[in-house]
Structures are given as structure tokens and as C-alpha cells.
Image (cartoon, rainbow, N blue to C red; front, side, top):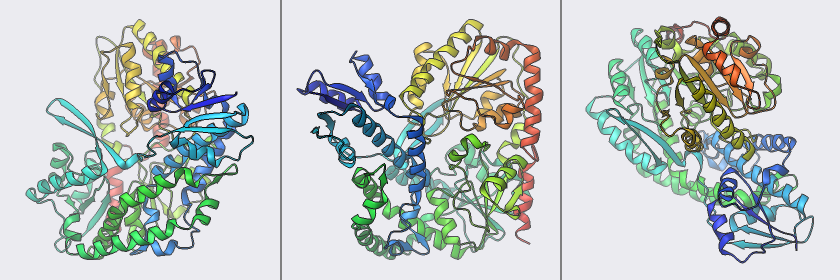
Length: 627
């Protein structure tokens, strides 16, 4: 009998070890975690992703993008509108994309395995059975299942929190529910410090959505000089999350939106609306015909694959969504903001405010990352701030390269652009770098392995691991000081990345939540590790601003011609290249280092307008909207 077993985690592996399955069954892993576990147990298996082609991955990604607006043609969509905001549309776009992409990626792996192996029997978890049921049968096979929870944890169901108590760093994960409880603790601080925003007392105010005061201190300084009061609405990460943030809020007389005060007098109305929309959502999900024909991929009707998870996340967040919309409505009705500034239009807070505002107050989307794409990877440019832009919104870009790109590829009108530069990087231009007189210091920067593109798979992670080992061996021979800085995002692979480094050297310093500037100031060179090479990390630009020779190593089979690569502003290599000589040159060859510094400076001058003065430029733009 031709039987196969599909595994995706430790639970599945325990089940197959405990069960009486056919010992001749072929085992397929669906991800790196299951592959690694079986490798440790010396269990023969195949990597399921080996059956998936590059074209399959592109098709999967494109389908996930198409389904971002899956609800738009639902016949009862209007019934879920509350105070001008559609509650279905509040779900964070990137979070939805990641959920859909992971589901579709799993589906295509299993489909390809079944097509190519033509099994008589499949041993699989209850969680994966829905995927198998969605695939048109090409042969008759028996499915043997074992019970397993189908619960899905969404990206923002948990938040990663980082604090410092004195010199001691503390980090932990906290649930979305418990985060809301912690807000009450922050509220006590705000009350004591008189940080609350009182719309009756203040004029000439600008609303900032989900801004970190530490990152944008210089912008707040410039606005304060012009007599503009900064109002902060932060629902994901508190604006007073540590002592430095509190001191900045106090220093520049910033005010915080008091959510509890704005909605406290309307609790009964909010409760009624929550109960009302619970019923409306139940009706919304009953339209099986619409949902079945919407969620289709390669003739697989996969609504049942995602049904329970998607319904549950809306159920869990409905109360929060209704409160958020009510808060947005009350805040905008009672205030007279000069403008609204946001870093994107995709998050729940940003989405609610922007929809509720409905173009009444000037909205500015501030570019906050090193966005620079080329034709080869244009399809992946879907994670930046120009999603859902209206023709009245302004985009504050970092310079002409990004402006010309958006005009050409996104058809954004000339009048929508404000060329300001990067306010968050003004302080980078005022830093005096420390000169190391003893050992050379090299900073290794990592980009998340998170699955946003559909490209990352088990082979990517294996190559990532091998690359880290190779880099570490070379650097140890060169006798340099090594520091590792992980990407500050909530990447579930950060722990795994740390493990790869610690396997080679358990004493290597690894940082996550610290400011990159802290490490760049003392670095002689930077090596950046990129798991796919389809975009550029902002940390590369930051290295160039500080005149640090930088190398980007890509886990791919091709290096894309981004501007900094064409201009030789950085050294670029594939993970399969011989890296020993290039890394040595990066650290010790005076001519190569000098050329990289010169070319890097030219690229920065070309990419960033108003270096060191972007905060002042943006502040004056915001001030002009009040006249």
C-alpha cells in the first residue's frame, strides 16, 4: 500500500510515534520545525516543500493579495458598517495577508504531494483534514486522522514586550486581552503626569497615530517650537512605555488620547452595538454560497480550511473594534485637528481613524522604511503605506527616488507628495562615531524569516543556518569583535535565529529591542543577512548614513539591481558565494572600505532629501496646514 504521513509540528510527530501506522509509510514535513525534529530523531522523511515550484509560490502569493478584499462583494457587507467604518475592513491588512498566505502555502504543498505520490492512504491531523477535503480527488484514498486542536494564533493576538529595569533587559509575550488590562496601569501614570488631552483647552493640534516618541523626538521638538501641540493615539504600544518616552512626552508637552474618558459615558450604547453586530456577523457568515465561491485556489474550495479561525478572530475582536470605531468618532467630532499623521493606513487604529475622518482633516502618511523596488520584485511591493490611499491624502516621502517610483508604478499624483526626508533619521546625521583602536567590531544584522512573500521555506531556513555558521567561522579566524542585532519586529523566527548563532558561540552578544544606533556608533563594518533579497532593510540605509562599509548577503539565486547595488554603495553577495575574501576586504582593505564609504554617501545624498533637517521640514508643512 502506498501510504503517506503529513506532519507539521511536535504534536504530529508524537502521534505518529504512538500510533500503529504502516512502517513503510513515507513521511512528509510541511515546514522547518517538523523537519528539524525528525532530523534529530533520525527519522527518514521528505521535505514537502520540495514538491512546490517557484511558479507555485508566486501563484500562492498573488492569490493571497487578491483575497485581501475578499468581503467587498458580500451582499450583506453594508450591514456591518458602524459610524462610517466597515467592521470587517478593520482587520489589520498585513495580519490577514500572513494568515491567508500560510493557509494557501500549506494547501499547495499538500496538493502537490498528493498529485505526485498518488497515495492509497493518508495519515494526518484533524487540523489538516480540511485541506485534504478541499482538494479535488485525483484518486481514491483513505484518510486516517488523529485529533488535534484547530486553534490559530494570529500575529496580533500576542505582542512582544521589551523593557529594561536598570541594566537588566526583560522581554515577554503578552496576549491582546492582557495588553488592554496593562493600559489601565499606563492610564494612572498619564493621570499623575497630567498627560491627558483635553480638546476644550487646546488649539493648533496634530494627531499622531501609533508613533513612538523616542523614534520621533526631533520631530516633536520642531513642532513644539512652532507652538503645535502633539496629540498621540497609541493602542498597540503605549506612548509612555518607558522612562525615556515619558520624559519626551513631558518635555514637549505632548498629550495622550484618553480612551476611557471618551467612551465612558457611552458604555450602554457601545454594549448595545456589540450585541447588535454579534447578530449581524452571525448572518454574515451564514452566506456559505458566497464564501465557498470566494475562497478558491487551483479548483480547491478552501473556505472550510480557514472558516473557524477567521470567524473566531472577528468574534474575539468585535468588542474591541466597536470601541475603537466609537473612540475614533468621538475623538474626531470633539477635536479640531490641523492634520492627522500616520505611518501606514493598514493597522486597526490607523484604518479606523482614516475611514472615520473621510477626508475631512488633512491626512499625511509618513514613509517610515527604506522602500526601493525594481521591476523584478514589483509584485511584492504591497506592504508599504500607500495601501488604501485616497486622492486627498498626502505622502511624506524621503526623497526623489521614492517619489519617482510611486508616480511611475502606483500612479500617485504629483500634488500628493511632500518631499521631507526622514525625520526618524535626523539624529543619525549628528552622531560622532566611536573609533575602535583595538579589535575591529562587526555588526551582524538579520532580516526576519517571517512568511510575508511565500518564498521562505525549509530550504531557506537551512541555507540561513548554514550562512550564519559560515560567517561566524570566517569572523572567528579574523579575530574581530562580533555583535548580533536581530530585527526588532515580532518575528517568531527570532528565537530560532538566536539559536543558530548560539550553536556556534554561546557567549556571542545578541540584541533585539535595543536601538540600532547604539550598535552602529561603535561598528567598523556591517554584514546584513537577507533571507530572500526582494527588498532592502532600512538598517542598510542607516549603516550608510553613518559611513559604515556594509555587505548584504542574500539567500537567493539572484541579486536584484536596487539603486545602492547599482551604485556600488554596498557589497552584495549570494549565500552560495565564497565569502572569506570579501568579508576580509570589508574589514581590512583600506581602498575597498574607502570606496564603499564614498559610494554610500553618494547614495544617501541621492535617496534622502534634507539630511538632518527632515523634522524641521515636516513640522513647517504641518504648521502651514493651520493657516
